[in-house]
Length: 242
Image (cartoon, rainbow, N blue to C red; front, top):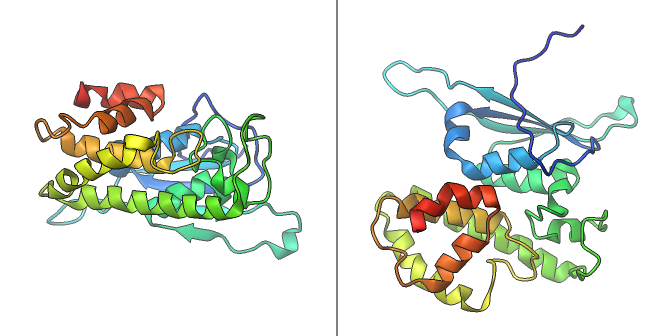
């Protein structure tokens, strides 16, 4: 018998049963504990595709321990004599988009998740049964713009988290409310909330928890925040708003 490696694999109710592509995510416990979106994506991934190794950060003399976040991608190998070298990602937003897109062969861009709005799947040249029968397949041009939008909105979420003053979220909220007046989600032509919606909702929620009344009067923002996420996400953040 092989000795079992110490690892943590989180399994969700929407797992896919494909092992066409594999990846290993190494993550510090401190990062995993505070990153709700990362936990949601891990839970949705198939354990046949994604292995999660949770590590306690090493203690450093005179300060806090370092944090580790790394995704190693291993493609599908048919000819073992020509295995390509693994691809390694260390940037959080890139890791999330990769897991929901090409890293796991777009398994998380199918229904019921659509973490990238079905747009990565569309650009890959196939539907794989992921899009519902009554949904139009987006064009390559609109999908490219949508994916760029997801990346941009996730950068906005990162900026909000990094702003210790909280001024950036206060400046964003009125503009976001106007933007959402004619939109259900941040990215057009998406059947459900995407990584962009989840990431920005969590970033705003973190700041809203420490500031009073910043969401008052923002009808569209409050509607978006309460309707976009899955039931588990709503349950975790609802006390912030209501």
